[in-house]
Each structure stands twice: as C-alpha cells, then as structure tokens.
Length: 465
Image (cartoon, rainbow, N blue to C red):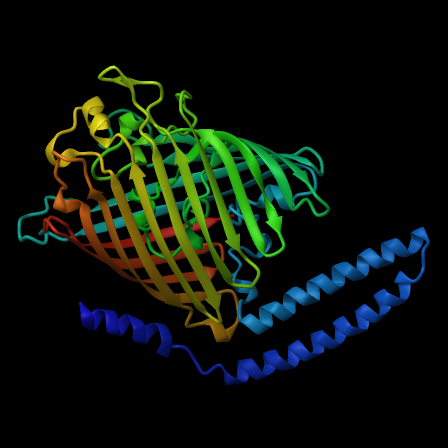
C-alpha cells in the first residue's frame, strides 16, 4: 500500500515538463496586459470628466475591456488556464451550479438546453478482505443521462431544472430498476447591479459539500463520487424550499428554508441518506434551514463551510411523545487549483437526536441502529501532466483518501457495526481530450473494521454540454 501511495505522489509532481519557459512567456504577457489596462484606465478617466449621455456608453465599453484583461492577468499569475474551465462555452459557472447547469444564466432570453451523462464499468475482487468469496458480479451501467432545461423570461426572472434518467431503463424485470427524477426545478428572481444576487424558490439543491451541487462527471476526480459525499453528505440531495443566493465581494453565499428529512428512512449504513424527500409528496410537518458561505476571492481557491439544521419526525408520535429527530450537519471544505495542480479536502460531521426512538419507529435493533453521531473526511490531489503544453487536452493522475464512520456513536443499548467504519484509498488516471469529455480509470482499496470490504477497479466515461 505504501509503495502505491509513493508512486502516485511521484506521478503527480514529477511527470510534467519544466515550466520555466512557460513562466517567462506568461510574465511577458502579464506585463503587456498591465500596460494595456493602464492605457485604458487613462482613457476612462478622460471620458469620465464628461457628463453627457453619449459618454456613458463609452465608459461601459471601457469597463468591460478592463474587466476582461484583469481576468486574463489573474489567469496568467495563478496558472489557472482557460482549459481548466469545464467547457469552452461554459467557462463561467454560477456559484453552486456546474458549467452545464449554468447555461440558462448566460443566455439572452428564451429557452436553453444542457446536460451530462456517465457510464461506469466495475470489476470486483473475487474475495473480500477476510478471504471469503465476495459473490459480486462485474457490472457495466449507464448511471445517468441528465438534461438541463431552462428558460429566461427577462433580465430578472428565469427558470432552471435538471431531469435525470438513471440506469438506462425503468422497465420491470431488471435486477436494479432505473428511475426518472427531477433533481432540481426552481425560479430565480435576480436583483442587484450585475444580477449577482437573487431570490430562489422551488426544488433546490441543498448547498453542502462539493459534489451535491457540482456533480457533472468532468468536474470531479474519480470514476465514482467520493463515498463521504454519498453516505455522510448525501448526493444528489434536493428539497423544496425558498431562499437567497449571491456574492458579496469575495464571499459567495446561499441560504434556504426547506422541507425537512423523514426519519423513517434513516439507516445504519447511510445515516440520513434514505431520509431525503426530494420534493416527491414530501411530508412538511418538519422544516429545516441550510446555508453555505465560501471565500472565492482568489482565482482557483474556494474555502468555506456549509450547514443543515432541522427536525425529521414529520409530526409522528412515539410512546405518546412527539418525535422531533433533530438533525444537524456541517462541513468544512477547501479546493485549490494552480498550474495543473488540483486538490480538495473536506470534513463533515452530523448528529441525530432521538436516535433510540427513531430505532423504535423503524424497528431497528442491535447493530442496525441509526447513529447519534456520524462523520467523514477526505483529501484528494491530482496533477495535469499536459498543463504546460497548452491546448484543450488534460491527463491527471490522482489519489484520494477517505475515512467515514456512519455509526460513530449509537444510543445506549445498541451496537455499532464495524463494517460501517471505513477507510478507502483511490488511485486513478483521468483523461480529457476536450474539457467537456472525460475518461476515468481507478482502483479502490476498501478497508473496514469487519474486514468485509471488496476492492474494485472502475472505468468511467462522462460528458457534459
């Protein structure tokens, strides 16, 4: 295991060509752009002294040029290249939405269409860690085919939605039936000088972690989404609600009041994941608040926190008393992209109140208990070995380490299942011929305290538009 880790780290940092020539050219370009900005600023100061209507159009044109050049300088200084944008046509994403999901915001008026998809092949080891047969068959699956439909009514009102088709079929007779689901569908009212803030209402994504909002396959490393962002922070997680979003200087924010979780769906292995209501005949006796705050003041850097707080009892009574089932969940997260390096780290922790009474509601006993505390963390890093060659293509060796405990603490009288205390290493390679298409291959080494895990190889194909 240690040898593999050392080889992965060496690949990340030693396989790229020397950057000295590229840096020299970049510095020269930066100086040229700064000179242009200085010249434009002088012109802007000159026309600013005039006070007629005609000069206002000239002022606005010059401001647009200065902003464009300033962004280019930031790109050159930080090494975040244009190809790092997930789509050439979608290089500017709205905070909390992936490139394709942001398409409607860049349209003039009327309808817009985008989407993404991913297919996954999994090859499972014949034996579990304890030496017994795994009895798992290799699988290939069209995990998702997703379409974004949006409509911009005018400069202030717009509609955005995501419709997902899972597992290629919803027909009877398949071992694992697929489904058609609306992941989000909301209306925005945009306000502010640059429409940088607004009010949002409808089926919204809960703004926690990275992947729940940014789940298009070319955007994240790995053939599969991180286990922490599936079993600790559920993805995809959406609820009906209303709230605000926007950006104030270097801070991006989102905050909503949403329908609460349903405690009847909580479990030992996935904590609150089964309690998502996703806007489908959702019980509304319990509500929750959720929010997020990120620092985005430096190109290539995102750092912040998010949280969720609410009850999950949905008006039920157990033993003559109302079941509240208070859920609190928060995370700390950071991402850094610089000169071909991309790295993420996340820590999440949640608590569930009335866990013993929820067990009674669901008939859970022994090691099947709902947790009182659950937590997880991961760190990952990758390096684009084609970065300094320019162009659209990228090749990223990467690794990820995860630790998750879905039953970190259980109520008195119950026990934790050691299979729910998991450590996971993922080593892989990601290739993008163009920013919108990705091929990924990785190996996952699962370990749990019960030694019941099965290692696997994964190969995935993904796209967005």
